[in-house]
Amino acid sequence: MPPRPEDDWSDSDEDDLSQVETSVLLGVPDGNIDVQTDVIDAAVSRIGGLPAQLPSSEPPISSSHCKSCNQPMELLVQMWCPFEDSPMDRALYIWGCARTGCQHKDGSVRAWRGLRVNKKYAEKLARKRERQLERERAKAKADEERLRLEVQRKNPQVNPFSMNKNAGSTPMFGLGAQIFGAPKSEVGESGDGQKIEEADEGDSDSDSGSTDEEDLLTAMAGVKIEESPWQNAPTYPPLYLSTMAEYLPPQSKARLPKGVTVDDLGDEDKKDKDVSWAKETYEDSLEVDQVFERFMKRVGYEGEQCVRYELSGTPLPYASDKTFDMLWPLPRQDPLPVTKAAFTVVRPQRRTYDASAVPKCPSCNSARVFECQLMPNLINVLRPASEVSKKSSDEERRRAVERALKGEDKDEKRGMEWGTCLIFSCSKDCSVDGKEGWMEEEVYIQWDV
Image 1 (tube, rainbow, N blue to C red):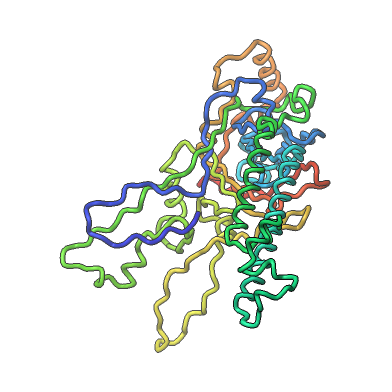
Image 2 (image 1 turned 180 degrees about the vertical axis):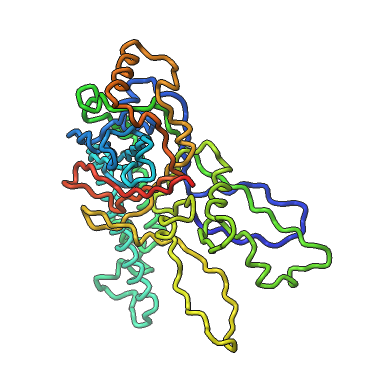
């Protein structure tokens, strides 16, 4: 989120009530998915349900297995999130285990990145890049011509009546160059570069209009679920996942007591001012967990959020734990003096976000960046189908009795207990062969406290 300027201290009764939009996108539930074409369309983001796989070769169902109990997990979220100006269709899949024995264990939430080249969009990007190169070449040629003419204007030894090869391009005979059909890029007018760009922009519009937008926005699954082992995977009822921008209310301005002016406020008073969420710095404190307090305050502005998405952004930490210490490491601090004469005031240490400790992508060795995080409300939204409908068939009840008799329901008590799950993905969005990909990404879980 871009930094916001500090608010001025004011005793005015009229505060700015306009909200501030951040760079974070919030994912919220938006009703049941009951259209079959949406179920198999990977471009439809969802909560729960079965995954709509992008790769043409079906990923192994072991991708959804919990690393703790080795049992298949339910799909928590599938998000359509292609990189800008990338020829690859891209979706993010996140599975989670709700078994009680797997809570607070690594590998109980897993995230995978599915890729598939979009040929039509790749062709469109190639044409776009070629137009951009043509604009750059034309601009460079026009700049070179303007520079040459400028040198001629400043050279007092040039004879405008001499019959040299550049006579037709001097200021006096500039009109002749246009009459005899010289290319526009060779005419030394200041607006030529702009004309070329405008013409190319027109070509771009006509080209994009000839492209079938539905083909670019629809990514049907490469393999039908009913023909694969995924058909019997456990699921939550599918819901649409819609996105909305995050807005924060303006920070309240401090009311100054009578007789106090801004000049009377020292550094000690100013440092207590709530500056901005964007700086994402935290002070160590022996009092309440200010990380959790900030989390609750930020989320409270939109309680329906299930996902926070900000590629290459900054996550919102849930609590002061080992994950927080890794992503917001303590800065190096000079040792405290041991003599009374060297007594100094030690200010609280401020932590700043640093994701350098996150393991690099094992495929291309590029840095991983924060992409999104799952929020506590997602646990409230995800409910087993039996709890949603309160109805079950005779066959389902018979299977439940059989599982109980065989002792297969030892973990019948279920429920996810995490506070937030942070997903870090490859910054290069790499694939194995440049055409398709199925890559597991890094997940950090901050558990409920």
